[in-house]
Image (cartoon, rainbow, N blue to C red):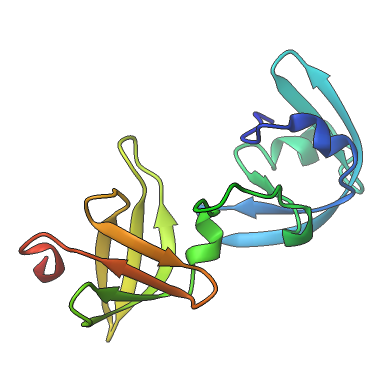
Length: 150
């Protein structure tokens, strides 16, 4: 696997994880039985995954650690998964909806905000996202004209 963490050596301590197929939004709990480095990559062995065919079925999936294993972040930073379910309001108090998922793009993440059967794509840039309050489960945005009408 290609590690997305700043501390890949921590996988040597993690024994439980979730293997996530983001395309199908399917998550499967797994037990990690071994980890070793090979260059910049980590080779992870899972219980019950004994053959090359079983391993190849997991190619392209993400490995997520339990929330309790997440590395602490500096003040003002957050993990994208922490936003899911947060209310989104405009800076003048209008309710937009709730974050349903995060889509990664080359330029910046897009926060998908759903309400009343509609979805809004909110670019995660400082000019638009003006406050994230995880304790209150609230995000405040300053949308440019027309963004919420798309």
